[in-house]
Length: 324
Figure 1 (cartoon, rainbow, N blue to C red):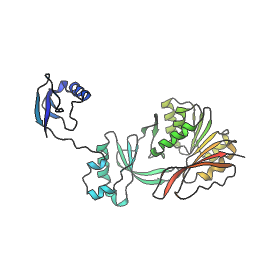
Figure 2 (cartoon, rainbow, N blue to C red; figure 1 turned 180 degrees about the vertical axis):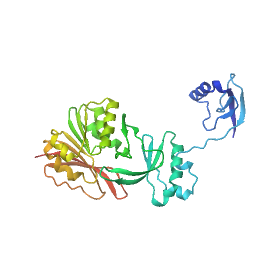
Figure 3 (cartoon, one colour; figure 1 turned 180 degrees about the horizontal axis):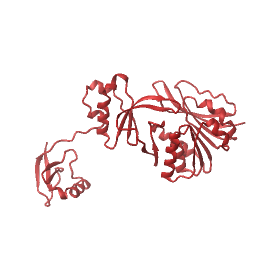
Figure 4 (cartoon, one colour; figure 1 turned 90 degrees about the vertical axis):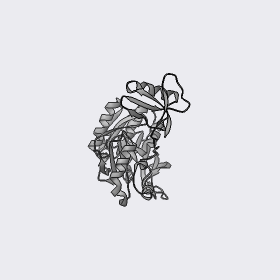
């Protein structure tokens, strides 16, 4: 495309380019041109100056890419079936694909890496497996190193290959942190690497007992705690059914074990008092009502947190202890 431009020595180009951008004269729809020791910068038609020699050059147009799909060279019908969203955790991207689309995994990974310049790893999600609820991830590009993830202004170490973690709960974790009062005693049960604990610790001066059976999750939480200089988190490795025997009564309990958290309600009964709040997470059919068989709590509210599958969603059930 023929357009206005200025030719400047490369040694001065960075400052000149910065000034043009600040004043709105840089034509960001066109690519810069290189000519030995000179850089040819495309400028808007309205740009005039006695300081530079202005001429017309044949510039290459920049293609606006709004999605990783724009980098893919595959059939358009296939593109339409590819996910429009995926989980981004620090410099890791996790994406789900239908079985017959897995053969395009390498192409998709390469496209994501081009679209997100600071992503280092792309993995395919095959669901959750094992005792620790770890995602069954297959790396297409990169490695399974830890990453630093920032959520609601909190930096934390996470590793979705070794500890379950979902960035889709960021707003939910903020909501819980906002509800916490100062000086509460809080149990974050099945805490993983402790994102609920970290969100609360940043906002409130409360004591948080963070418990999980996965030792790697607790190790990540300890590192996050040190990185943020939080002194109000107590990380504990172990089975909550055992650990609860050594904990004081709680003001608030978070139970993020979506498929069977109700089974553990009976174990927290000895660690509550009248008025204790319990935030219990369950994955249910969208038309199903939660069943709480304990008569010492009452349901305050039930809210859908996010969709889990076409017919199922994760719900938060807010409970209050009303009797022993």
